[in-house]
Length: 312
Image (tube, rainbow, N blue to C red; front, side, top):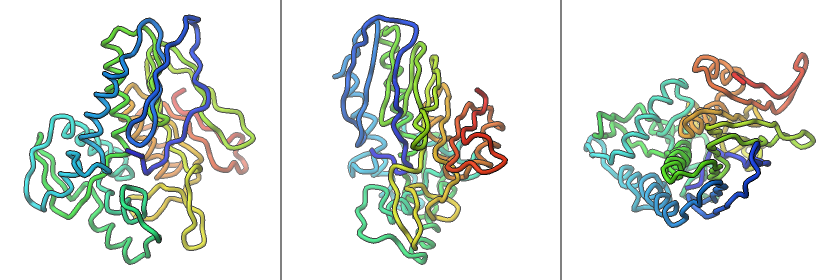
């Protein structure tokens, strides 16, 4: 399940404070890869892979048989009973949508598809008329969720790629923790959660050293705008959309990283921050008391550093 709002890989994944040998497990999931480094007990790869398949079967926008794909085919005003997992994740996505004033929106499926950032293949980028048309049907506000009962009031197509990978990280973390593994690092497509203390590095612009962060029993998710980009109307844009305009974001941020106990929430908040830009991202982090690292694309006077740390 590739994430249309790009998350880059971290550079250094070095454990600190212990010298016991690390067992490593790697595999593929959600259109990306995962890595587990563990001490104290061995991770069960068959168990991990089985759980990841279950999650993908619920949240994938690429698998036409997934529960999310079935939900997207549901007619308007025809209530549908969701699984416990999908309803819980969607409920959290709706809460983040409200907290971020719509900069995180799980209802962007149609816009994501016409831009070619999702499962649909497109040969040309959309014109402004087709963008405006898709934007009318690209908001979670056109849906209703009561408990596990979901209905659409508009022809909305959900896309949970901005939160589902974070959920997968949390779930595999729980699985590993229940196996009694004393210390481990879990990474899925660049999203990281650790048990114990680990040193990681957040990638910085060319010519700058990675930004070092120490994680202890917490997670980090990063959204960045530099690894995948395209030219539209003569300007360079990243694969990150502004939910309010339907247009790609020309952000002043190189990347936004959020440290949080929940990787699901870190994933969603980092996505929203890249969409809203640095000034609003700083306000959001302070309002919600988030720990975040923002790397500005440019540092102009009187800026002393292009790295902004909040709550750290």
